[in-house]
Length: 264
Image 1 (tube, rainbow, N blue to C red):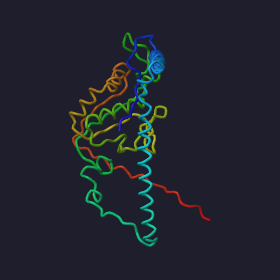
Image 2 (cartoon, one colour):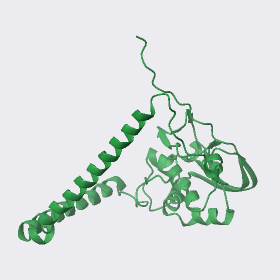
Image 3 (cartoon, rainbow, N blue to C red):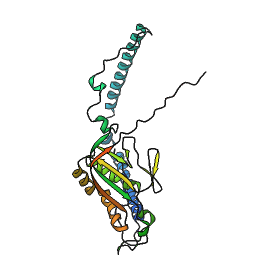
Image 4 (cartoon, rainbow, N blue to C red):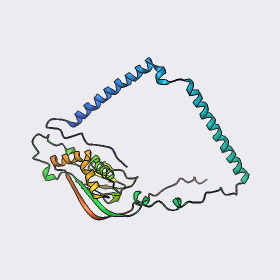
């Protein structure tokens, strides 16, 4: 599960506005898109036969689709007739369960986050700039920070999570909660909303796996490297800890609710 989002592309010197620069890039991109679309339209007007192909070929393809659908309908009618002949009291035939259906493959529950997992881990802690440092002083040549520069954002947590998955993590937790396919990282203000809880920084992400690969993935990830630039410039928190033997709890199964008929 890989999330995509990013902070601005890099730190900008004093007086530069990252968001304005980003808007300029987007404006140039939209202009290029309009020019490209105009070129495609002109190409269709000037040489439509080479773009669209021989229209007679579509008739043959459509006939094949209709024939296949008709054969499917005939099979369904035959099956319906067989079920009616068997009578309403006859239970439908079911295939005998295979070994694969009886038991999940080895490691499947762990990968799904539904089994407790043990092993060496890497823990990353992200934190806002401490209050005592928010007044500076700052490095020469950097613009004075705005409020957004001094807090951990959703994309910063996502960057660490994505890097750890890329480094071969077998299991992961955020704030001690097991990450599954249902997990979404969402920030509300400067807090993190996760499952049914809201958490304030510091934000703690842990991953079980090969510690060397996980550490290398953190070092090589461009988005994590960008966050570390803000750490160096504005004092945000970034700490990486090696844990010899960690235990991650299994995720709780979601509760399912089903629709029921209204009473007459």
